[in-house]
Image (cartoon, rainbow, N blue to C red; front, side, top):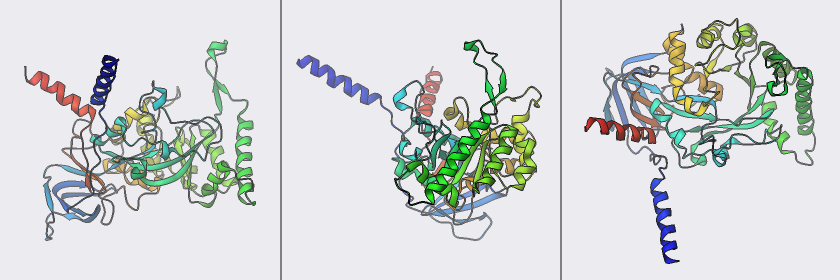
Length: 433
């Protein structure tokens, strides 16, 4: 029995020794910090060469030329030859909701049922996720944590990526509700002997009517005495009064046009289209209705046989040129891992015709404006949060985006992850031989 108990104790100790939690969150900023000499990319399309940036108590107090005669404060970081950027922002993400796809206990990105507007992703967010931690060395410092699945999947919140728990992480709580528009086409079930190609969805009209009826019922409930209490309808109140944004996941041209009709028929105040693969085909309609787009993943292949081969790379440019506000996301296969490539999506967009500083806006100020956090994040401006980073080179180029410092609300955060630990371990193996 004693040997058995000793075995259990040793096993537990070895298991604990193998657990590598996320880096300890940084403490609040304790002294002023001055960054001098870098090229500052403000996130709003402007650039300051040989910049001077100062921040205190988590807020930017000065940004301008290093030639300005002003007293430098606190810790001074010499950043000559380097670049400073606002922290990158990822919309429509499941970061922190799934850790290992194959381990069911770590998968909490979707709820059962069809109508789940009252399901809040924030309380399921794992602030100690190793996957979340690995975003920071590429400059991705904030994200909209979004539930998946069902017709209405739930309510998202916006978090920063250096926190003890979801309460500390929260930047904007319950910012919007996410809905999937019915598909115009269905895929043939090859395992049932059907043609595996696409065919018109004969139930499309039925599904759109069911969706419209649900919203009508929610309005009727909200205008009644609300008895008995209906939590899903309660959660929808914000999209009717404009305090929350409705994010509609829709890709095809007809679906986008039908969704816009739905928006008007229900007098919805704040709406964003997510995915919007065919948005370039109805860009004028989107512009007229002032509807922003969180665009499909840039690093993807064309969907249709007659699409341009480079359509996913240039879609953002086509929409921006029409005056549509665009942000980028990392949805799709292995989306959490691919989120670290967010800056390189913007780099690809720039390589296909969009001005580089405008491309930067797609993952900084545009994303902040779409998510409703631009009062504090998304650009380097006086009074805004000191959420920024210093890179040795161009942050939109995977060859040169090498961070030396990163700050969230003025706190200097760790750039160490389990991946950097492995890199150091194995690079040492070969340099020592």
